[in-house]
Amino acid sequence: MTILLATLALLLAGSLMYSVLSVIAAMRYLAVGPPLEPPSPEPISVMKPLAGLDDGLEENLRSFFTQDYPQFEIVFAVREASDPCVPLVRRLSTEYPHVPSQLLVVGEPPYPHAKVYSLARMLAEARHDLVVMSDSDIRVGPDLLRAISAEFADGRTALATCPYRAIAGRSFWSRLEALGMNTNFWQGVLTARLLAGMKFAVGPTIAGRRRAIEAIGGIERVKDYIAEDFDLGRLMDQAGHRVILSSYVIEHRIGSEPCAKNFTHRIRWGRTSRRSRPLGYIGQIFTFPIPVALLIYALMPQAWPVLALTASIRYASAWMISQVVLGAPLNWLLLPVEDVLGFLFWIAGFFGNTITWRGRTYRIDRQGRAVA
Image (cartoon, rainbow, N blue to C red):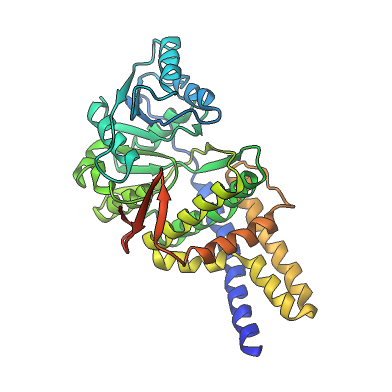
């Protein structure tokens, strides 16, 4: 019992230090601020891989058509011409004739990652060097492209991740997942940025220089990786290109999934993360101070002041990341519930190397690549 309590106490101390460090990381991120807009913004190609009708898809796509930017195009890609999103894309293209747009029907992908295949086809058709690769469930303000242009105006930046605030759907599980994204996930990203810099990319909207992507072998370099965003940033950094975390926060509309489907994709994410960055995944133990403090309290009830202190520090860190950095209101009541659930999913991620993704089953190898 003594050894167990001592081990938990060390883990808790590390977790509290990590929470404090994440607040410092958030302050450092906010201190940078957005750069000044260049006098002559360069043209941008926006690429949107689509599959089906997501919740709020029309509003999401419309937010890109209505960008306050002098010169940009939008390239869409679907697998089949019969995809239900095709009529919507054509209608919006008609409503905004001043925005050049095209729709590609790419067919079945010849390698595991369908999104990467769509991006490769769209990159081949895009007319501009500065590209924004954005998923269908993203909604932005009219100033996104102006912010992106400013961040690439120095000529040194090659890739930029847009941080996002997750917007939950109607289901209870969606609300929990969004809360975890807006706290634990971005806590980890900001802390990694503080300690080592952006040696990776994350998230459903990434901007980049096409010539830099081509210099590392093209977007096809990540065709076998499930976490293609993470590995694209990793490869760009290893090649000596500058990778940054953008100052522009977007909205990630995660929709409403039932319990079983939500649990399945969270376990898939855990297994993929463990394979993509094994040491970092083990280190996630320090992102769960409340579950560790609860274990200590269960073993030694007189340690309730430790639980109270832990909750205070955890709430302060979560508020800083979610509300101050991302602009997402913090659900104070659900935070401990999500922390405990997230802790259980983290443990589950250590078991199993197979995932089910887009109707197919894959084994994840030690490099994070998908093998059918």
